[in-house]
Image 1: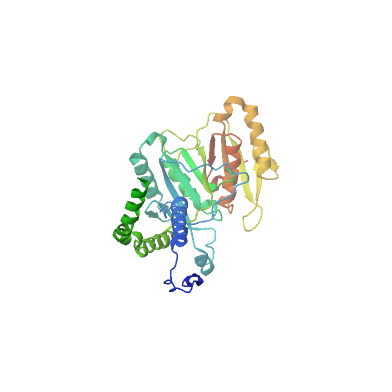
Image 2: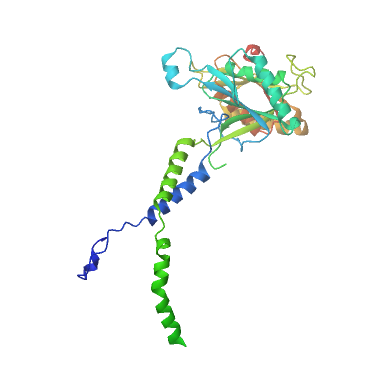
Length: 162
Length: 168
């Protein structure tokens, strides 16, 4: 034991704590977090994504804008009637839209397409909570039609192991 | 020779120890502090994502003028009508308008569309699938149908507005 002096009858050595294992663990944790973490992004709002049978969802693509159909939080749903299947708002990056802001959404999507690296291959990713009624997501499809964007990606949970 | 070397070694050793002593115990406390700060930072800023991905498809072509015109299709589309089977909208009834045959579940929808894909051959790439969700159908069910269509190899998959759900 530290400070035991080895039982030789000599002067007992000073108390010594070996910090190496602790630093090892801390470094491993740092490396683990560095490799596994995904930084909080305005494109990835917390919600319950759809989980289709035999999902063919693939890796998320680049050159796209993400339209989030943001649900009410569980607390807000509990405190208000009829909120469970309704969208609280729509978000594209840091832009927020209400249900009636179709033209604003169209304008932002057109702008995002123009600003993209390859406007011809520009895609829109639709992220929505699975409990939201389709009538709430309809606005996004209308905006896509008006902005003449055909390439869409729908966010869903991936099949485990795919 | 060997003795001299050992002697030199023995003679030099205490000096080395004396010189090296500040380096032998470098201050580890700031290092640990930094690591702990990093861990706390990562713990607070990271989000553990669900295993998320995207299902790709092309919406059927619209009028060249853009806007609100009807969808232009070269091949007659297949309409998949989704109707709420319960008040919660969690489960749905699936029906293909063209055949008026109800399908038991999403797997049956996949089987039907896969057969259509084979039947149409190379033209199937231009065969639009229009999903028509009736009022009250949840997004989860629409995505499930969308997934089955893309999984069956369909390239053009669209979703009609709820208002037009009187088809058939």
